[in-house]
Structure formats: C-alpha cells, structure tokens
Image (cartoon, rainbow, N blue to C red; front, side):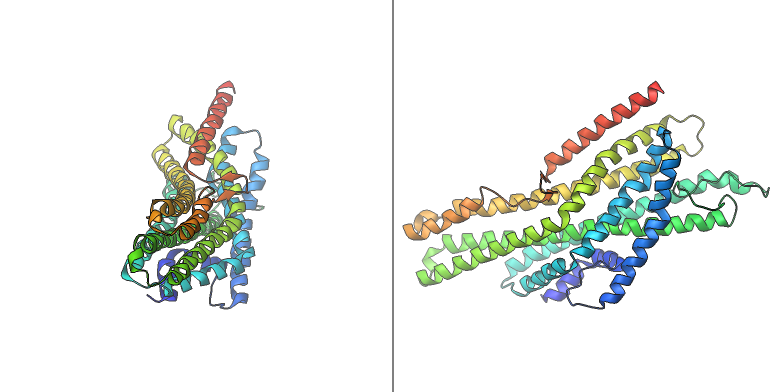
Length: 404
C-alpha cells in the first residue's frame, strides 16, 4: 500500500480537524503562510470569544461557588487546554512532520501480507478512535443547544422591549448590552463558533495522538514477529552473516521506533501536564454541577441540564482514558518485544549469537513511557488515581456547599 495514501486515509479526521486550525504537520510542505493565517485566526477567535470573556466573568462572580463551578465545568478549563495544545503543535510542527514522513516510509517498506494486515488493523483502529474522539466532542457542543433553547424559550415569548433575562450559550462577560434580540442571538452564535473551534482543537489532537500510538504499536508487533521468525527458524538461515545482518536490521528498527516514541513524548508531555491538572479539577466541578442540576427544585430544564453535563462528563473522562490507555499500550508493546527475545529459541543459537539477544532483553527492563511533564507516567493506574482525587475534591465542594 502506498505510504502517502495510507497516511492520508487513516488520518482523515485528525488531519481535517488540525488542518482547519493550521497546526497539522503536513509532510509535503504545503503553503505555510496560509497555515499560520488559519492558526492566528482560529486561536484569536477562540481566545476572544470564549476563554477571555469567561475569565473576566469568573473574576466578577468570585465567591459564588455554584456559578464558578458552572463556568469551570463548561469551557474555561478545557478550552484553555485546547489553546495550549494548538501552541504546542505549532511549535513542534517540524518534528511531527518528520515523524509522519518516517511513517510514510514504513508503509512503503511493508514486504508481506501479514505485516500489511497488522498495519491495516492498527490504522483502522486509530481512524475509528480518532472519529470517536471528534464525534463525542461535537456531540457535547451540540448537546448544549437544546438546553439553551429550552432555558430561553419563555424569555423569547415575551413581547416587551426591555432587557430580557437571557442565558448565553456560554456564561461570559461581554462589554456591551446583549440582553435583547438580535444581539443575544449573534453573541450566542459567536460563542458557538469559538466553542466549536476549541473542541476541534481539543479532540483533533486526541485523535492525532491515537493515530500515532496505534501506528507505533503496529510497528512493534511486526518487529516482534520478525525477531521470532529469525531466531526460531535457524534451519532456514543461509549463513550466519545473513543472520547478523537481519538481527542488526531489527535492532536498528527498534531504535527507530524508540526515537519516534521519544519525539511523541517530548511533543505531548506539556499538553498532558495541563490536561491532567485540568481534568482533576474538571471532573470534580462537573460532578458538583451534576448534583446541582439534579437537586434543583422547580427546574423546567432539569432533563436537558442533566443530559448535557452527563454527555460532557463522559466525553472528558473518555478522552483522558484514551490517553492513558494508548500510553500504557505502547509501554506494554515495548516490554513484549523484549519478552519475545526471551521466549524465542535462543538456546538453539551459538553462544556468541545468543548473547546478542541479551541487549534486547536488557532494554526491556526499562520500557518506553509517555509522561506528563517528565515526572508522571501515563497509564491506567494514573487514570484511576485522577478519578479518586477528583472524587475527593468533590466531597470537599459538597461539604462547603452544605455549610453555606
């Protein structure tokens, strides 16, 4: 399968999302000026339409626990993380572009149907997961619309010309009077566009990471099979020089995969710090808002409120789980390659040849790892700790609310 076509097909959703924002690392070096224009436009629009207005509003209502929780649970935290993701991807665009070029070369080097099937399975899994990330993000964005329509329905029916008690799409401050039609509707549309762009940045990056992780996982799988095939079929070896060359090639590919994971880790670890901190707080406040919506008396929009916050909570938890799962998958694949060196028929090799496998086993004692800020390894155990921490924060919020 042609490498360029494979990359374009399997990265369809993340490429479309990040390309819209001007941060997709295009390996073919297309118009950089246009990409920078899209980045400035989308970054500026998101910042001034959602993030900054919400930050100002947060300062205005400081001390009101319920309003603070609603603001933090909807946009301020995740959209700030989305802007950080955009900046990091733009800064590392050249490195990620070179990484994608190496992926194209790896597709071109596939030599048999077994390797092709492994890479196709990995590519399809990455494509599906990328679509799921983007779909859940956009579903959350649009789940807010029926909630806002229902909340403002009675206000729209009023015929007086005075300022009306509208509720914005996102709770925020704007330096003009928006409490009458059609200014209210225009303001909501501006917020919707900013929310859409921030969500695309957030979920597009998640899909991009998933695609890369599945590709590297497939490469590890192929490398493991190559090693087992080489050592377990020593009777087919033409000469020990041929064996040495094949083993040298396997070790070189192993080092290449580890370098790719190192590039991936260096690019994403800053994002992960921001996302882990934001998620720890956001799971807490979203749980608090869910309790707030569920216990609010005489609320006509309770069903829509609960549906929105549940959808949002599932989306946020799912995103963090994907990161932790994919990071742990790469770590396991790294360990499994070293384990394959132990499980193969090394005892059939001459002593000098068998010693070569010790280096591979030794590397497996410290598998590759994706970290958050170089101090916290992403895995499912960390995912569980974050959830437990968030529940602890939630109990504190509930206690504070009961005292008040």
